[in-house]
Image (tube, rainbow, N blue to C red; front, side):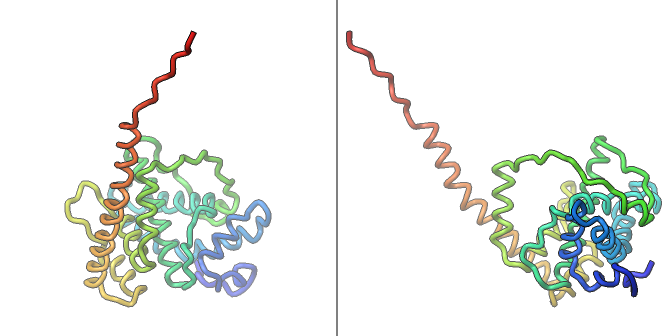
Length: 245
């Protein structure tokens, strides 16, 4: 499958950033033709990468290449359905947007695997044919309000600079809670280092600094929150006045 089509509406979109393509997909209700064309370009651009990630990370768990292909297909379906949820975070550079889009796709795949392991669902068997995915309906899912802790983490991430956010978001994609020592796969670290114009060794230092900033931000915000809670608990209630007869 040619990642750079030379004719048709896909050719007109091939030079657009991933944020632009996802914006077209998010408007499938208004312009389904443009949404399908944008999806094809997005799919061609990232399918080999995402399939490789799914195969290396989850292939053994899902039964080999066929299971990785199913996971890849389902991740692209959810990306199409939730294109409006992609947050470019104000990034304009195409290379950094590409990395952010791939991290987002990887996060979707990881969540699917987590749900599978928890027994909530199985990874559905779907084809990777373009004609199938061009007819994917929009999702209708209720959104859950973030908890105070989740909002605090989002605020902490937003306090980081662009480079630090990219490193942390990519790191979270590969986080394994059961492992004491966390590290990115070599190929992912190499690609991230190339995108940021640094080395894998410097990435580790950048990650440590970013994690330290997050911890300091959370501690700084937790103090006022705890004080507000304590003050609210300790404020005496005013006793009702007795009426005089």
